[in-house]
Image (cartoon, rainbow, N blue to C red; front, side, top):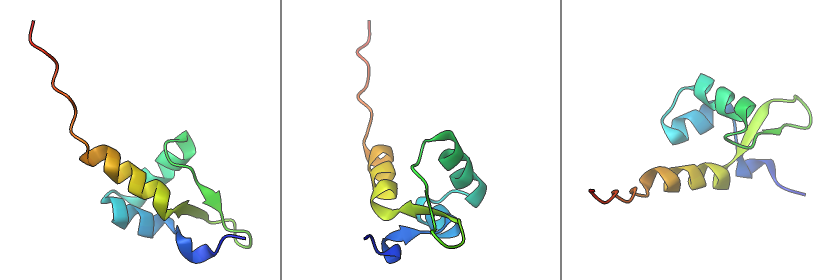
Amino acid sequence: MAKLDSYLTVAEAAEYLGVSPNTIRNWGRDGKIKEHRHPINNYRLFKAVDLERILKKVDKPKKASKPR
């Protein structure tokens, strides 16, 4: 069984990624971030490793297209 301390709340995830809590909720709803639910209170939770993957995608520079 996974420990809940490896998950972040909406507010924690928003701070971690530098976006608003509503953005996190929208991304979760739209499937851009996998959201999990707390087994007792049904709050949204996000795995830290999933958020880290998003930061790595943002940090990765795009390859410049070749001029024609």
